[in-house]
Every structure is written in C-alpha cells, then in structure tokens.
Image (cartoon, rainbow, N blue to C red; front, side, top):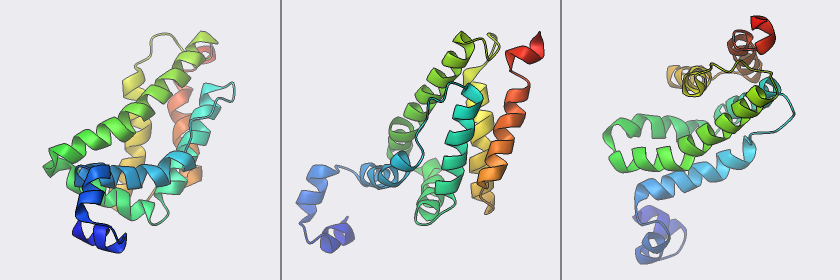
Length: 161
C-alpha cells in the first residue's frame, strides 16, 4: 500500500480511505481491466452468448497485465481469506449470475434442456480457462469457442428430441 500511495503521490490514509484492504484494491484493479473487456452479451442464443463471452475472457486473460494479475490472484487465493472473499464477490458471483441469466433465457426459448446444472456447466467451461492459465498455456479464443460448443452439444434441447 505504501508503494501505491507513493506512486499515486497520495498519502497512505487516502489510499486506505478508498481501499480499506489490499485485497479490495487488487480486485478493483483487476475488474477495471477485465469487466469492460469481457461482457456477457445477449445475442438471442445461449450458445453464441457463451462463445462470445468465453472467447473474450480467454483473450483478455491471455494478455498482460491481466494475465500476470490473474496468475498472482490465483496464487494468493488459497492463503488469503480476504482476497478469496473479494474475488468471489467482485468477480465470480457476478459472472455466475450473468451466466445463469443466459442459461435461463436459453431454457425459456427451448434451446437448452430443462434438467441442467447451471453451476456445473459454469465450472466446466470456466474451469478450462483457469486450468490452462495455471499451467502456463492460456486458452486461445478458438479453443474457448471449441470448449463451449463441445459442452453445449450435450445440453441442447434439439439433441434430446
């Protein structure tokens, strides 16, 4: 926090007034880069919505400084409860909520099967992104699209008719 205050030519008190904990500051910096770069669209197709969102996520996660920030976050998460909470509330919960809205729309349109574990699908799709990130070979946009299309193949309503 001292280094941030010095770089911003502000006092530590000013920094702490805006960000009461380092985890909150880190998440704000991460979200400022990621949120506008990877929106959850509404194209009229749940599959296409996920393709576009996961492609955008893979692209932004594969570029610096976001890649470095996310690897640092993931590395620090297991040992920092405050950071876990900030990551969950700032990033994961809103993304899960957006994904759920997209999947529900797909179900209402008859595009997706009704008996679907929304949480499991989210974990399968985004787990691939995080695993590859941790392994040092970030998912490409094309691989993200392929992962979505493969995952959705089994839950499309037309496949079950």
